[in-house]
Image (cartoon, rainbow over all chains, first blue to last red):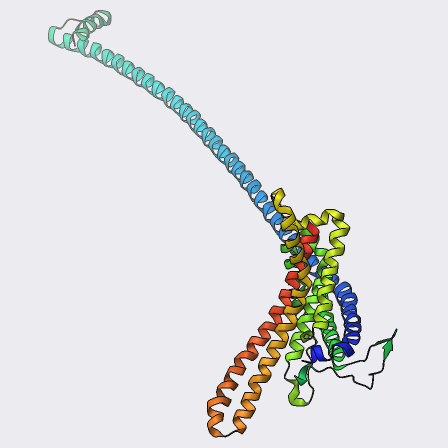
Amino acid sequence: MPQIAQLAETYSSQIFWLLVFFGIVFVFVGRGMVPKVMETVARRDQQIASDLAAAGAARDKADEEEAAWRSRENENRAAAQAIVAQAKAKAAADNEKKLAAAQKRLDTKITQAEQDIAEARNAALAEVEGVAVEAAQDIVQRLAGVKVTAAVAKNAVKKAMTHV
Amino acid sequence: MHQFTIQPIFGSQNWELAGYNIAFTNSAMWMLIATVVLWIFVAGGLRRELVPGRWQMAVEYFTGFVDNMLEANIGEAGRKYVPYVFSLFMFILFANILGLLPLGVVGIHPFTFTSHFTVTGILAILSFSIVLVVGFWKHGFHFFSLFVPHGTPLPMIPIIFPIELISFMVRPFSLGLRLFVAMMAGHVLLEVLSSFVIDGTNAGVGYAALVGIPSFILMIGICALEILVAGIQAYVFALLTSLYINDAENLH
């Protein structure tokens, strides 16, 4: 076994060169490069974490804005509905007023017409009376040969007409 | 056992430092290769892009893996050990896997330096020293309460204390030996099986069918297993190191 057979002659060189090369590895690789590699990893992890946090914040903000938009939209809709309802009520009131005015106009026309009719009837009746008086005078003169005055005839006609 | 032999290269067998031989051997060569390959691998992941490519993803996977292991075992205080445990884990992993590469077919013979207990032992002692330094630095002599589990009855303490102390002192040995034995056993097993394949096939058609082919099929499976072991042993070394550091950081 060379490990034991050569021990006395090689141990110093083995120890020396091991310390030299392991020392180089430790100083330049272990202390020089490894911290930089780990720093890169840590920086990347940090970057990922901050990116995730930013994305989360952006999402929260978007949610917030959507909620705000939604409430604003609801308000607008409610306002629009209020305006529509108001307009409807106003239109209904206007209609009622117009209808009332039209009704009034119609009513006056109707009363006017009724008055006219009554007047016309009275006039007609008076004419009929006059005609009846003359007719009664004529009839009395021809049948009885008696001349009656217009006043008497009129009286008689009035008496007779009340029985009609 | 030739694959475990250490040979000085570039005529460096007489290099000395303060009286000690520091020949640049094939073992040191493969440490250099593991260092360079690991450097290239991690440097390739250093592009620091926000959206990582495949290479950067692989490097970040390994750092994240070590980071998670330390955080799971030690907690938030474990993060400052990431450079050390990452270096340890990746250095052992690259050494194990580079040593398994079938580069022999192109004339380069890989040397698995983690199959030498001089190497694994030093790494284990390094981890153990960190545990001791952190333990005494943070807790002072209170660190010795590690050897008296919480709730031990008073008369039991004289018995429990030495047992816990021994189990603590054995840690660097078990840590270093485990890696060395696993790597060496795997390579020996592959060598034995390949000698069955070659010798059996050379001995004639009957032996080839009876020994050579089944050994070859078995060897394919064992190769997959060895790749697994290379990863697992690196992981176990790093995991146990983090568990021991946890004892020093948090006592219990």
